[in-house]
Every structure is written in C-alpha cells, then in structure tokens.
Image (cartoon, rainbow, N blue to C red; front, side):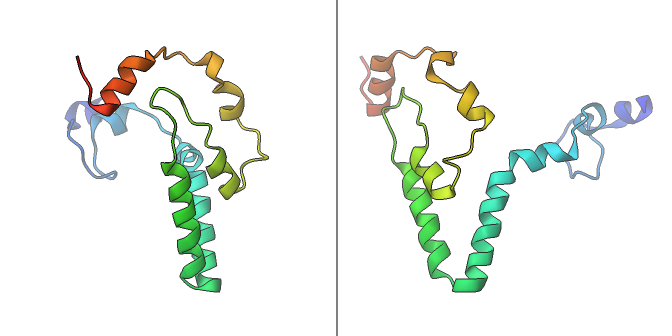
Length: 124
C-alpha cells in the first residue's frame, strides 16, 4: 500500500484511478447515500409522478419547492425551512437538525448591520 500512495497523483482523476485522497482516506459507501437520501427520494417520487400523471404535476411541485426556497429572511437570520418541510412532508419528522441546530446553539455571531449593508451594496 505504501508504494501505491507514493505513486499516486494529487490531481483530480476518475474514481477508478489512484490519487492521494483515494489511497489515504476511507469513505464508507453509505455516507453518500445518507447525504443525498432526501434528494434521491424527491427525484424518485417526481419520476414516479411523471410516469403516472404526466409532466404537469411534478413540474408544479418542483416550482412550489423552488418558490419555498427563494423566500428568505434577512441575511443574518437562519431560515427554519418551514415551507419546504411542509411541501416535502418532513414537518412531523424529528431529526438531528431539529434538535442540534437551535439558534441559541449557533456558533456564528453575526453583526446584523454589517451583513445587511454588505447585502445591499452599501459600504462606508
């Protein structure tokens, strides 16, 4: 294995080729599955709806989800994503994000006036 690490390149390559990251880092196959589970489930549901009902209903649901993501708050406030959770059916699920991402546990202290001025293009 040591010889493979020494001959591996540091550039980005195909997953079948050797590079330093693929030789040294161990990533479990389920980690990607857990990261993209909600997106995969959404796209699978949209594909089944398209096969069953045609193009209209999945397009409408996708645009509703897009509109729910576009509505925001002031730049220094985090969104709770309530509208998206209602549309995707995750409103009644309790996950780690619900428990561990409370505003009082936020590590990022933001200065609201500076962030709003930067978002509006006002700089002094």
